[in-house]
Image (tube, rainbow, N blue to C red; front, side):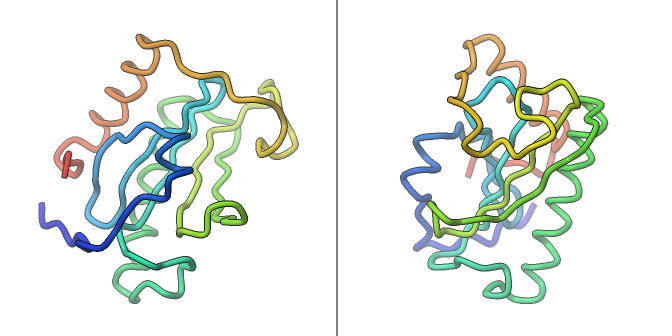
Length: 146
């Protein structure tokens, strides 16, 4: 798989603190938010200084959409989610990143947003490994460590 990494890219410290790195796709770094209540992943295009989708080239925008659609399909099929929430807010973290959250009618924040609802519940080690292994298997050959 061809990688198109920006050598100047650095993950925002807040994302590094709140998430577990799963690996790298063609455009994005794939992260898992450390909140065991929700299957919650984040795609971060590995482009330095990008804060908005329109700042990506048209080809990069299309690749972001492909990666987003594939991640959304994973969440829907793997977890039988009632709804997939996708958002690129960036109010606290200006670096472009796109949240993908599997939502369920019985989850703690339903039907409202998960942001600011309550404190995160970190993963237990075995549960974390299972979730990371599952998404890595889904993306198989498309996901790398670099």
